[in-house]
Length: 205
Image (cartoon, rainbow, N blue to C red; front, side, top):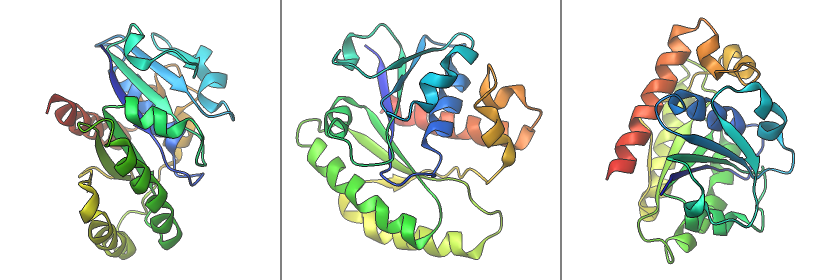
């Protein structure tokens, strides 16, 4: 049965597709990997033919656990979709990317409520908040992280230790056959591998 990793946040522009695409590209050569595009905007599916050794397809009614993959990443829309709760219930891990901003902090709340609802059906569902598109050295990041830590305490959720810095190469990466790994950016590659390793450790629990 596949490990299901869903990348979700109702706020647009926080890097859901970029994160999903690069994580899938980071692991695809080790295990059979699929990327489900559940976003009607279709960013992942439009780029799917570019990627080597990675299957990209749209969401349908097939239960995730019946799909023939080791790892499945689900790219979700920038709003509260009618399908999102069912996606959460089928998932093993929810990754919630967010920028370090007050507006972004407020938008996390609906995801946390949905996570709480999904856990009624899937008690093993894990979740982590990912600080994404971070301005290096910004004092605000620490302040927002403290606020989020207080806000999420009741939901049994933590933040990833890894943060993804705001790099132009991440934006460029989604049009490459192997994502960020086709760009000579050692720092970005290290960030993505650190995130992947944290993710894998969570899924082993």
